[in-house]
Amino acid sequence: MKSHPKLSPYGVFTGKLFQYHANLVAFESSPPTTSMSRNKCILIGGLSDGLIPTPYTSDLEKECHSLGWSLVQPLLSSSYLGFGSGSLSRDTSEIELLMNYLVCHHDADFFTLVGHSTGCQNSIHFLKHGDTDMVKKVKVELSDLPCAQFLSFQFVALQAPVSDRESMSLTPGNHDANLEHAKSLLSQHKGEEMMPRSTFWAPITASRYLDLFDVKGDDDFFSSDLSDEELHERLGHIGNLGKKTGLRLLAVFSGKDEYVPETIEKEVLLERLVTAMNGGKRNHGAARGLLLKNANHNLSDGSGDKEIFVKEVGNLLRTLSADS
Image 1 (cartoon, rainbow, N blue to C red):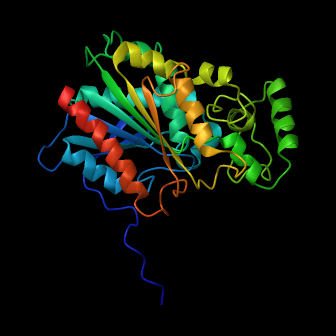
Image 2 (cartoon, one colour):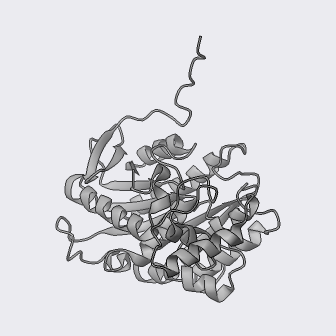
């Protein structure tokens, strides 16, 4: 006799499943006291994640609901194993489609992004490279989105903003040879060709492999070996947005993240990331950091870690709700 399956370990959710673009769906769970909240918290998971991407999804939903916010969980083309043939640019375009749909059909006024793992790269890229640069769509007129005059995008939380490139050093394989092969394919204009099956645990194109694992690849925002100038080049737009729009960002790093080499001083790296976001100012600016010393990558192990993270997100959402 087969063993009895466990009840959904990350929670059971009630809400609305909807199609926001061709073959793309999202799930929105609204506060029980209202059929449709104007405040939307969008949760974006990491590589191979989809719906219910983290062990704190249910906690985050409850916190959002208590403050009058909906929780939105999108499926992107890059969800599950789709990331191997995608890009951050494609993800950004689809997040824009989602937000426009929510404005048009779900009465959205305010947005918050919570990114887990590679969802952090999505959030950083989205703020820098959105449609006509999403930078220009933060609290300014949306001339090319038909359903709204204004879009307010005020808060981003990054949970586990780690380097995929540096995490690769923890896995077996001839990574240098794989990089050279990917570069060779790209030089032949074959970036969309698949890498050999032995290269990675998921199907992946040469272009996507380089995005994730090459120095200064498109996803390389959080590596410890980048200089302060290189980090500022990649992250400095956060501070500029903070000055222009009041955007705030919370970066939460786990002290026992299993995807970060032990040789990297996590507290030092977190300080450098926040300083780069704030234009060279460690404690003053749009971004602030939080180190959960005993937490693992997705906050599933350390006692109370996911609760601390969700509470911090809630505190900022509470501030935004009061301001609006």
